[in-house]
Image (cartoon, rainbow, N blue to C red; front, side, top):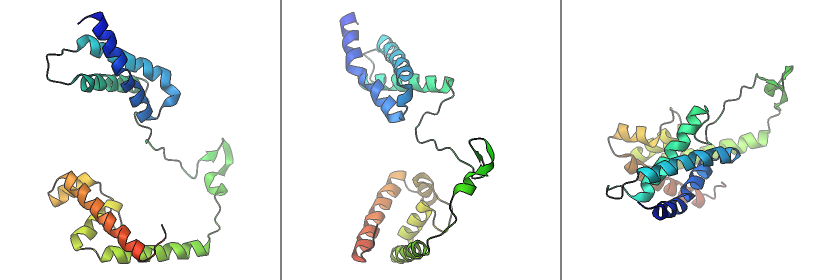
Length: 188
């Protein structure tokens, strides 16, 4: 492969570096991640064989993602922005031993809000109970109502169907629920 072809490949595929950094949500580390992505792209260009059946952009994207993930792993950083940190309510605030989050949170409960929420829950449960038993079980398990929450894959395994079938069914059920709630003038 000529240097001109490699340069064209580089210019055409460097957008995938920016795409993956944006997907990770780690803009503060943009330069470091961009450098790691460049290493992945350069190694992909040097090792790419157009005679193999894999597509060019798929191969380059995978090499970029692997390179950035490897960098994050070596830096002991999370790969995703959705990693949630658990905060203890008993932990002292700013190293003050006598003040915790539990002390700061107000304990005044708004009775009106509690009553409104209970009413909404009752209406929602009435609508859920109108579903067929299979649909009802899927929604209750997916949202963890009166049971442990399950993801689509776990529900699919229990029903011995594909994850896509459960996803399709769940979305269909949610549309039905939404329409029934709109008829009852339910406020979202």
